[in-house]
Length: 215
Length: 418
Image 1: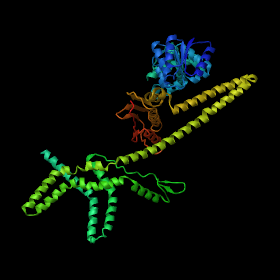
Image 2: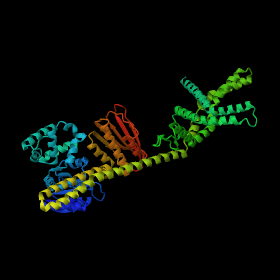
Image 3: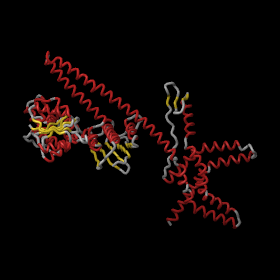
Image 4: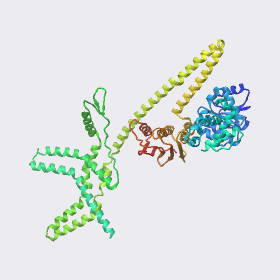
C-alpha cells in the first residue's frame, strides 16, 4: 500500500513510518503541518493516510481540517486519524459524508502493532476503524440512547464491535459465538434500528454510525 | 370630569407625601430646636448650653442612619429609584483556636464583646456616616422647605378663616390656593436631592471595589494553589509511578531476554499495558486542566462536545462567533460542565438546553434542565465556587430553581472582545 503519514512530532512520525515499513507497506510522503498534509494528500492520493489531529501552524485541529478538505476534493479518500484524545464531535464530522474509508483511533493504538496495521488495512479497503472509546461514547450518549434502549445487551456489544469495523467472523471470535449467531443478532438489531439489511459489511457499519449521527 | 378628579387624587396623594417628607426631614432640626428650648428654659447663661448641645449632637448622630434609611425607602416606593446604601458590612466573627473571638479588628474574650467592638469600629470608620450627617443638614433646607409649602398653606388658610377681618381672610384664601396648587409637586424635590447627596460617593464605591477585589484575589490564589497541588499529586501517584514501573519491567526483560525469553515477552507485554495506562491517566489529567476541544475549537464546539458526551439529551444553540480570552472561555466551559453534572447528579434531569449568546455587554450562557430543582448557592458548595470563579472576571451567576424544577442558570461575563 502507498501511505502518507502526517504527524508533527518527529519521534512519533519516525516510529509510525518504521512500523508501517516493517509490515511491508510503503510510505510515499510525510507531512508536518496542516497545509503540507493537504498538499501531500491531493498530490499523492495514497491508498490510506495516517493523520494527526493537532498540527502546526495553529496547533489546533489543522490535521482534521486538512483531512476533511481532502475528502471534499477526493470523495472516499481513506484516512486514519490518530489523536491524543477521542471526541465524539470529531468522529461525527468524519462520518458525516457517509462514505467509508474512515478511521479514528487513539495514538495508543500503535502500541499494538498488529491491530494498528489491521485497522490501517481495513480503512484502506473502504471500511471503518473507530476507537472503542468513541464507540462507547456514541452508544452511551443521551441523544441516541432512546432507540438504542430497545437493544439487548448482547446486541449492544455486537453493534459496538461492528462499529469498530470488525467483520461478523471477527465479532464472533471476540464474543465466543458462531458467525451465524452474530448474523442473527445483526439482522435483529438492524430491524430494531429500522435499517434495511445489506450484504456489504462496511456499508452496514456506516449505516449504523450515520443513524447514530442523525439521531 | 375625569381629569379634575385625577388631579384631585394626585393633589391629595402629593399633600400626604409632602407631610411625610416634612416630618422625616424635620426630625433632626426638631432635636436641635428642643435643645435650644431646653437651654432657654434653663436660663440661657454662658455655660448651661453645653449639656443640651451634647444631647443634640448625640441625637443627630443616632438619628442620621434611620432617617437616611427612611428617605431611601420613601424614594424607592414613590419613584422606583433605588439608591444603594453603601454602608460597610460587618465581616464574620470567628472563634480562634485560643478561645478568643476575632472580629476583623481585634481579639475579644466573648462573642458579644467582639460583635460590639466590631459594630463600633465599623460605625466610626464608615465614610457613609459623614455622608449621612451632611444629608441631615441639607435635607431640611431643600426638600424639607419645599415640601413644607402645602402644609404651611393649609395652616395659613385655617388661621386666616378663623379671624373675622377681611385682610386675614384674603391671606387665608391665598394660602389655600398655594396649598392646592403646590400639593402634587411639592414632595418631588426629595428624589433629586436624595439621589445627589445620599448615593455612595465615588471614593466609597472605590473602597468597596478594592475590598471586593482583594477578597477575590485571595480566593483565586488559594484555588490556584490547590489546583497545582492536585495536578502534582495526580502526576506523582499516577503516571510518574507507572513510568518507573515501566522502566523496571523493561530492565528485567532485558536481563531475562537470553535466559528466559518467554517471561521477557510477558514482561514486555506488561510494560506496554503500563504505557497505555499511564497515557490514559495523562490524557484524563490534561482534559481536566484544559480540554483539547476547547483548545482546538473554542467554547461553542467544546460545549457541543460536552453535550454529546453527556447522558442528558442536550441541545446547544449558539448563533454567534466568539473570540474570548482563554481564561474566560475556560471558566465558562467548566461552569457549563459543572451545571450539566449537577443536572444529572442532583436534579435527575433527562433533558437540558444550553444557549450561548452575546448581549450588549458580554457573553451570556443559559443552562436549563428539566430536573427537580431546588438548587441554591450555599457557602462552600459547587455553585458558590462557580460564582466566585466567574466573579474573578466580574461575571455573575443567576439561578432560578424552584422546588420541583425546572432549574435555569444564567452565567454572564462582561467582555469587549468580539
